[in-house]
Amino acid sequence: MLSIITAAEAARLIRDADTLIVGGNGGTGAAEAILDALEQRFISGQGPHNLTLINITGVGAVTEKGLCHLAHEGLVARVIGGNFGLQVPFMRLVRDELIDAYNFPQGVMSQLCRAMAAKHPGVLTHVGLNTYMDPRQDGGRMNKRTTAPLVDLLELHGQSWLLYRVPAPPDVAIIRGTSADEDGYVSMEHEGTTREDLSIAQAVHNAGGTVICQVKRIVKRGSIHPQMVKIPGFLIDHIVLEPDQMQTYGTAYDPARCGETRVPEAMITPDPLTERRVIARRAAFELRPRDVVNLGVGISAMIPNVAAEEGISDLITLTVESGVVGGVPGHAREFGTAINPRVILDQAYQFDFYDGGGLSCAFLSFAEVDEAGNVNVTRFGDRRDGSGGFIDITQNAKRLIFSGTMTGGKFDIGVENGRLAIRRDGAFRKFVPQVGQISFSASLAAQRGQHVSYVTERAVFELENGSVTLTEIAPGARLEEDILAHMGFRPRISPQLKDMDPRIFRSGPMGIAQSFKALPARPRKVA
Image (cartoon, rainbow, N blue to C red; front, side, top):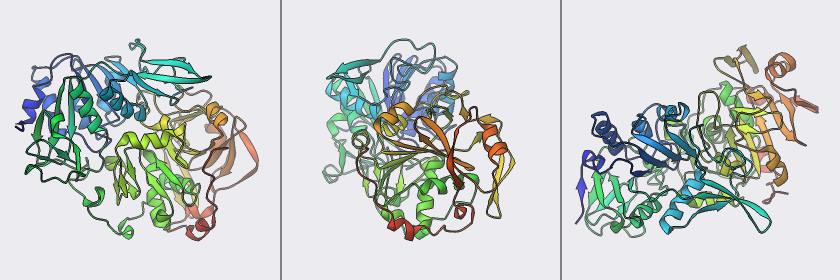
């Protein structure tokens, strides 16, 4: 018989020192009612305490919701997570050395769920070599108090591999779906992602734990088409009914985000022409027909808006690591979903494709770039974001475009009369002599033949022969005062240094569709 309980009752099932797996991806898929109830129980003094938390990636709306509910000292003792950037209050626990904190690549975390389900020892992969995941560096440990090793370096058949060990057997899973029938069979027809919730349920069930699933409705026994069922009922111990469950942290329900309907591309309004839009426009020039593309968070997530305005969306395939293929990926509180997706895969399958080198190119952000071309996005200043899918993607895509503003902090930069206007610059350098943590290894990229670019609002750099090389400069930017003076090293300057395309700095469509169609597709294999 189906067990339907309240969110508060679900929270009371979690005991001191339990290992808890929480599903969700970015701005979608979190069982918000249960997480809120768990927080309220802890605040009231009823516990639980000293949990080990496993989260596949960041879950939250940056300063609230999601895993921000668990950002209380004493509630969590240890975290093994794919990302913490969307849960800033929780990140503080890591930064202030209040909990043990491990960060593994998002794809590895997703695949670890399958490994836990099958009771395998871990995930053996090349992903993370030569980065802070490598035990020769930090071994995925995110602060000083975290000492126990969970990543092993192995040599097999003359090649180096990393083994990410499975955590302790999980006790409780908190996951989410759309509908549950009277036997607990769960479907996800209104979800923007399907994540790895099936693998989580299998892992916890096979470990003898408790699986709790939040849904928005209960339907008649056997009424869900078997091809729509994502989780069989025998894996579910308890259902929490939450009729007001939101699709994302920004949207109650948009049928175009789960494939129920499609909206005309013309309804997508172009973003305003800011310095961030300039970067996204220049980055879009790196696209080629038939590219299969990954888009990261931040500025890179603005590229679909550019592609839509230019009328080239149908000539490329945009993907998000959450498992979404096609359509126009969302950003901010909609990150992880897409408008008009063509396919929504379980996340682990998306990373199988990524890890095997299937991506033509990837657009990602940077926090720091050093003289060798290494990139840090994971630990800088007072932030402990972790990698998310960054390492899986950057070690395997054929071409990489890192995007970000030239400086950090408060600045006043805009576009005036077709030229970049730098009215006040940021105080923080992003181009530094040596990055604080290696999230992307430039030397490994060179070994693998990847083509690497770094795009800012005022300059474009390429990684050439182990050196960061300045290749383009924005109209309105001065070489010495606006670029070189804000770098912690002197880059190589290309003999063919040129201006960025002036169309980037003009309002309205750039008109690149015709020339784009004439471009040759890039080869499928890295040289």
